[in-house]
Amino acid sequence: MKKIKSFFVKVLGNEKTQALAIPLFAILLGLILGGIIIAILGNNPLEAYKNLLQGSGLLPKASYAGSKGMLTDFFSFLDSLAPMIFAALAVSVALVAGIFNIGVSGQMLTSGFVATVLIGYSDLPGIVAKPLVIVVGVVVGALIGGLIGWLKYRFNINEVVASIMINYIAQYIISFFITTQFINPVSRQSKEISAAARLTLKNQALFGLKVDLPLAIFLAILMAILLKIMMDKTKVGYELKAVGLSPKAARYTGINIGKSIITTMILSGGLAGLAGVSYYLGYFGSIQPKVLPGMGFEAIAVALLGNNNPIGILFSSFFITTVSKGSTYMSSTTGIEAEIAAVITAVILLFSACSAYIKYKVSNWKSELTVEKGDQ
Image (cartoon, rainbow, N blue to C red; front, side, top):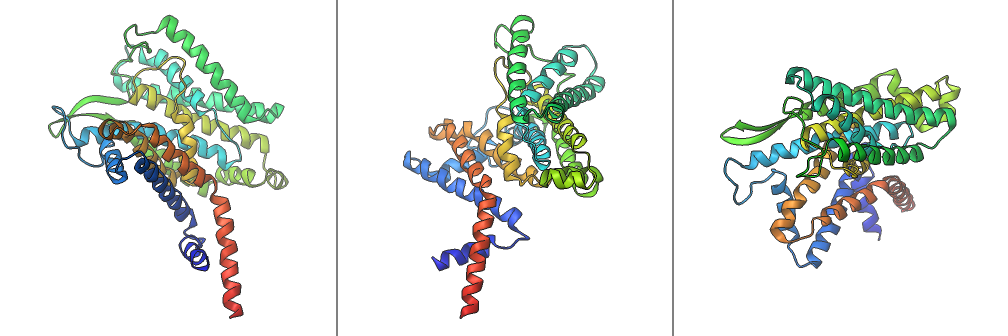
């Protein structure tokens, strides 16, 4: 037992590297447990994980259809990665200030729908339509997020309750309008938007291949960097973190708690809006009625895995998207149910959520070993 404690203290006990070591430990545990489940089902875990990477375009497949290749899969992966980054950043901003924005899915859906109706079905040229899609997405998401923040500040309505209720309201109202006004009779989804308004350039020729070029991925990376700078270098970032650590202490230092709560939710909602337009007017291209985007809930796992650090979220988004995106190919190749990928993600989330407990236990073991060493 002493050797086990010593090993974990050595690997996870350094406070300077814990922010990276513990998420990696959670990923490792998730992959090991997922591998055990895959083995129990009678499949080779290494082969299954190889298929995950192939499905995401990170490894080459055995064969490809005409005009397609590894780059085709990789750019499709980047296309789905962009909204995941935005959604995880939306969750992270709120969590930093001690607020749980579980309404990212509803904010994504509403922003995507409004941008689709106003811009996606218009005849505007691409040079005008694409920036307007982004502006509309940010504004609509920020308005919904600000409303949730205001309800919490003004009437002390828990943000989780408000977010969930708005999710349902958005889901059913938007579904009504799609099925009555904007339905595609063949796909049973909303009519496809114009190519000029889409944030993904479809079927572009690159190195002799047909690929979908995601424009939003560059904005997603930029937003993560800007958010990191804001949190670490600006007064707004300091106030948000102070409110998250201790609202009472923050109030005594002169920080306006109500303003900080509303500001946080405006930022969070705006990022969720970007996730919505990059998903519905980028990666997906239409809206499925009566369905909230699961990405809004997966983003919680991504934010936790990234330790609420915008740069960490870039890497955790990359990993979780690899698992979810590659699961379809893994299922078709090996026969393993695609839901196994969700199990792996859930296990990783579980261990990520226990990061504070892991730090506590490792700290206790470190103290015990230090005392034992001193007694000797």
